[in-house]
Length: 231
Image: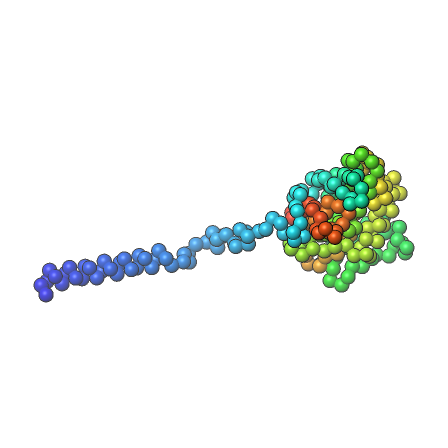
């Protein structure tokens, strides 16, 4: 082979080598980028419906302090009960209100949650915006959720919530479960236990007296608690 042919062959081989190297660099991962440059997968897969019962119609996603309307439809009558409900706060891991506990059978005793659990108190304001006296209770119509795990009040939890109702009754505020007149506003409380290391993310409030009936899951509101919950 001539010296000119040898030179061309060498140049050709070098060109191929450079192309292979360039392709490899273009397809290999960037190992020098900063840790914050990648977006975590969880940030792009968050489900806005997490916390709602499977199959339930979500009527809204209000924030804490934002009112929403509940319309309770009874199957045995054409009357509708209408309320405006506002979740004012959710407090977890704190002692229950001593003013409410003063109404317990043994005043002064501090109730204890189940092992590994903490009490959360959901404080709400309920306003009758209907045309006649109506009643509503959170006892069977609310869950407190940690992501996709829902916690309901137990019977003993509801008894503790009843102590809050008795306290406010002493202050002239009738508990909504006993019925309030149009235009009247009353406080409502739910006591729910969740694991001690968890923080609630949402609350589900059914637009009815129960979370579900024989007809299926009741529609409701998915109240957003993140960044507003005190623990």
